[in-house]
Image (cartoon, rainbow, N blue to C red; front, side, top):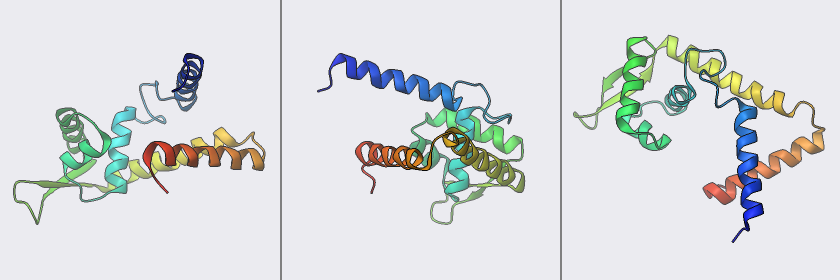
Length: 144
């Protein structure tokens, strides 16, 4: 088990990284979206034909909160719903052209944010950063 100093160090890193990424800002990348809304629209963008419940479950969000976000997106013509071909009780969600444009903007801004974060590091340091992320990904999410 980690000692208290190690736990404190991890928590300090989490706070600093959160601040560095701007996650505490009310809006994401100069868009009208909150960070949660940005994650929802990107989830739909990367995983088309999901149901609202699938989006909520994948992001570990409250289903009613997700529903309110999706209704707002629908009202703002960022998405539309269609009947599921496999379950008549269920709807699939899809991004409109306007929603796709916003999702692409968020995706590109996210890529640029990482490039900007690493720009002052040497290529070996960038590789070290990437390797550290891969280790965390493997340990926390059992990937690779």
